[in-house]
Amino acid sequence: MAEVASRVGALSRQRCILAIDTALGAASACLLEMNASKPLAAESLPMQRGHAEALIPLLDRLVARLDGGFEAVGRVAVTIGPGSFTGIRVGVSAARAVGLACRVPVVGVSTLQALAAPAIAAKAAGTLIAAIDARHGSVYAQIFGPNGTTLMEACHRSVADVIEAAGPGPLRLVGSGAPMLAIEAWSRGRVADVDSQAAAPDIALVARLGALADPDPAGPKPLYLKAPDAKPSATLVRRLPDPIEPTPADA
Image (cartoon, rainbow, N blue to C red):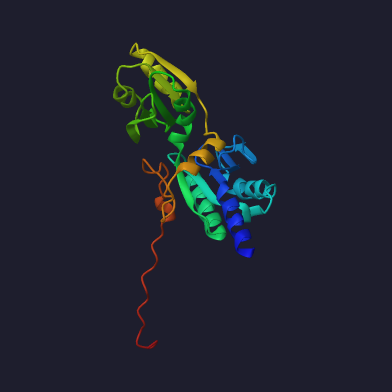
């Protein structure tokens, strides 16, 4: 009887996924059972900074609503980027910590794939571009065919280069970089529709994509597509003084 109860408990743990996203303009998390249509609980806080301070209390509030608490979590999914360097590190670190504490697998989910998921599911005609504003006239982007096939891998490129790479067909654009791409496409006489300007992916979709992902034994790795904008200030890097040679009197 104890063995049967243990197996039932293990199956229950496998059905519940904790999803975390701090890669873009929100701190979000949700709990989703396998094959469920709606999350058991979800919370999303729009923000550009402060993800580290917001995430742990958010997770505590969320998991407190789950029968069994963290013991009921069977998998953790986390967005790995592209996005904010700091935000990505916050989310991945938290996900790894929960996975280690709960002894469950942790999987990474691309923010671009999560942003593209609703449009891919709609199966509308045209080439789909998921894009995140990377500033200075550039975007993080990935291009998909009508059936969700990747036509161009995630990259950091100029708006003009992405439109050029998308080909002549009608375009469907999603993400915070969508308006920039639309203006560029229209200036070239191209047909382009902005499906969504979401600043962050739907956290429930992150959970569903995480449920389908194959766990990597090494855990999720941040997806950085460019070097950080911020660089250490030279004034903060101080050279230590050379060691003082002992004098004969000191020896």
